[in-house]
Image (cartoon, rainbow, N blue to C red):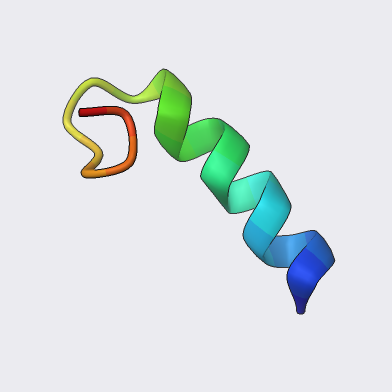
Length: 22
């Protein structure tokens, strides 16, 4: 699960519309 979350987080950071990228 952590591996998947890490990948998603990485993509989210690249997305300007993502909360994590904000």
